[in-house]
Length: 449
Image (tube, rainbow, N blue to C red; front, top):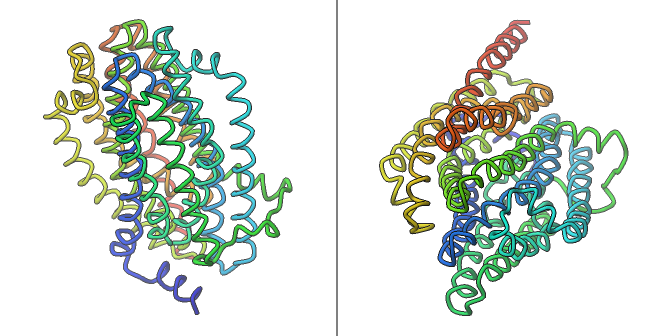
């Protein structure tokens, strides 16, 4: 009865209400996660410009960890939603357990390897000699949290793809709020410096991990993390990894792009690295709105595609696009006209503010082109169109961004670096159009058969 009720909700409830019901908890989770990342940047920014730059450098490391977590999380979650749409609960449990333990084991491997190669890793990610000591201190804390961070991504996404977004929010939100509280205690009261910010993040990651795990232990889900369901064979792992490749491409290229961005900005000093990092964090906060609604659309797309209810997939796509565009547009304009104040919150340094304002304003304009690409990425990954999803996910943070960054920085110097992300957003949006048109034409033909 519990399963049938969930199935009926995902395949029959009116699309707008369903996506909002699933998207709002995810939006809250995204906002809290982004806020506590911004809280680290805020408190660290009180130390020095070099320390502020360190958070931008370590952002590349976090992108690597998130890439792995999202690969297993979205990979297993996408398959799970379609299996549940087909009422195949046993297979769904195998994919959930396999995805979780694969991510957990790989998280421990990264902890060990990253600790051994810490200095060259930070230099590779764009650390300057003055930023390096801060970056190493902050990064070792993030590495200690790697097992929790990557496996939490899996649990969070499994809950979302099941249509249990509220439980995912309950698992993530307390940890994020704790991170902000511990930042204030460790850095303001105990004067622990950037180590305090890193320690706060690590502790909060393990708290979130435990809360998410509790949802499975209390059997709030159709899936299971019991080790008996894990299948570490080529078929199961291969299916998870190939389905999760869009997330790996998106987040992995985000890490590589951060490396290129920091190295390009580093030519202009620590202030440029700090400014671009702050602009990126503020932009990501705005982006969280459409990303949260997009992730609310994912289980709807997966369930209904598995149940062959193609009209609901199409309806969900356009509702998400319109609703997300309105939310993101309003937020982008608010930040555009207050860009200086937004930068100043994180680092009250005239040089950082001067560099950060045009970069943030350019990204606000570019964000208007983001909802369409997000809806495409979310839809194609959720329905198992692996090539479409992987290719389109690779564009914004990699296949377009890196060449555009290199070309514009060579042609226009710092000004080119400031507008590179916005240019990549426009190109990515245009590229998505034929993929969308082709897919909807295809399902329209299948509905007529």
